[in-house]
Every structure is written in structure tokens, then in C-alpha cells.
Length: 89
Image 1: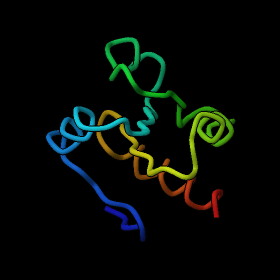
Image 2: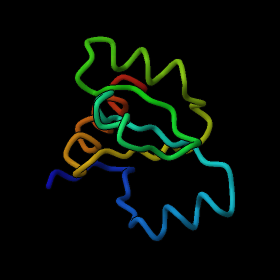
Image 3: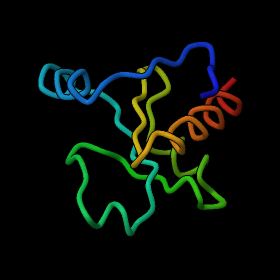
């Protein structure tokens, strides 16, 4: 697994705790087909495979708050985090 400075992997349990305690920024980077099978209610969506992924993600995000990303297996989450970090700097 690649490591990126400023990123932290959290467990499903930790995510549930964050969701129950506070409003957090949650970005779902899965495909529309995956999202149609279920999603976390407070999530924003930006399909990593869309050519305009960064624009869709950045329009929906508050850059002053931490962002939590999720996908089906964590692979796309890592790629999405790298893209967002590179373009936000």
C-alpha cells in the first residue's frame, strides 16, 4: 500500500463513531452502480473514474475541514486521496 503524508486510514468502527458524534465530510468515490446498492446518507459523490473527478469532488468539499473518503476496497480511496492532495496544494 502506498503511503501519503497527511493521510490516515480509519476503521469502519472509527468512521461510525465520527458519524455519530459530529458532522464530517465524507466523499464516496465509487461508481454509480456501486452507490445504487447502498451508501452512507451524509456522503457526497464523485466517481473516481470520471474525467472530471477533481472538479466534482472539489465543488462539494469544504477545504477548511478534514475529508474522509471511502470506496469498496480502499484502492480507489488511496488514488482519490493522492489526486485531491496533489491538486489542492
